[in-house]
Amino acid sequence: MKFFLNLVFLHLLGLGVHASERPNIILILSNDVPRKAIASHAVESNTSNIRRLQENSVRYQIAWSMPTLLLSQETLLTGQYPGRSKDMEFTTTIPSLLKQSGYTTLTAGRWAKDSIQMQKALTTYSFEQHCVLSDSLTNQGGHHILMDGIERTVVDPTEVINTYLSDFLQKVGDSPFFLFYPMLSGDAAQVNKQPNHSQSDRVKYVDRNLGQLLKALDDNNLTNNTMLIFTAAHGFSSVKQDDSSNSQQASNRGTNESVHVPFIVQAPFLSEGQRVTRDLVDFTDVFPTLLEVTNTTRPAALELDGRSLLPSLKGNEDPFLKRNWIYAPFEKTHMIRDWQHFLDSHDNFHDLIKDPLQTEAVSPLDKQAPGRRLRLEILLQRFMSKLNQDEQSAK
Image (cartoon, rainbow, N blue to C red; front, side, top):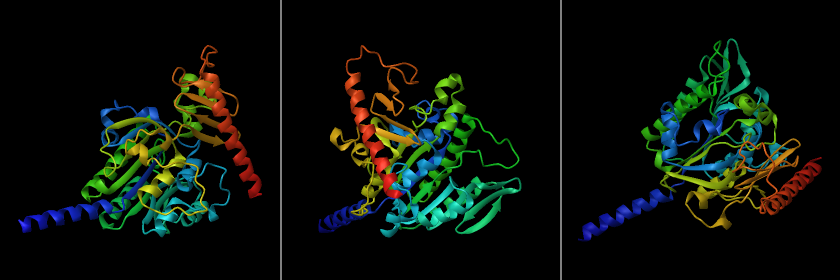
């Protein structure tokens, strides 16, 4: 009996140690893959890996990126809206904090920087390891990849990046890691071949890359202790290309569709998944979420614009622990929305449930709309004033 009790105690102790392990983090930012192409439960059979991820994850129906790939990248890594931080050299980033707390930090994929800026940014963001492609490093002779400080010319950058990640996951051991993965979507993957891929091609390409990553996690017993966030940034330009059925709507930069992106979180240690939520999320929420889930201390002087998603991921229904608006600025256009209504700085106000394409004015018979509009106006003005103050203080 005593032997049995000792075995039970050792088993429970083992569970406690495992539960206290700091999770690995993978943040995937796919490029030019609109939400409508993958966010449905009825995704095509040829996107089996995306479907598998959705089935094991919490899927957010209302998630906003920033309006461009570059702004999205910066917001995810700094936790601040565009315009809030002007000098990246003195900006605290999520990889820098995780590195200080014992995480291995790496990035792989396609960076929204030119070659000179990219090399500087890798150091500024505190990535210890990297295998990255920049558009400006691509020519007819091949693609130039920067791999751990060494520039290489390769024919197929996707194969090189996938191999790099697979090798890393095999050797990672017990050390926690943070991977930022701005995934190639096929548009820069092949030399001297069709340069413009259709939306369907891009989705299939992302699905294959995702499948290789999921397999590597499974093969190395890393899935259960890894938080994987899959999202995208298609931006204004891709909305124009993919929404040709309504060119006037697509050309309007102040649209929900221009920043409405897939957002899927797989974290087996937090949630069994298989859940769809209308909780609001934008890209500033990733930073505080990762701080909380990794038990990383937030510097007292660090201002973050988002809120942690942990209550939402755990299924907590307390509305005071969640957001009730999301926001995205771009140049002179500022956009904000709640669960139903959208407002931008050009005075466009729409009911996104009744009018998802934003083609009609809100009905004057809607007695709730004026109050909701006033609330969004107050929030929007507050953020625009804050950005103006930050710009003035940065001068």
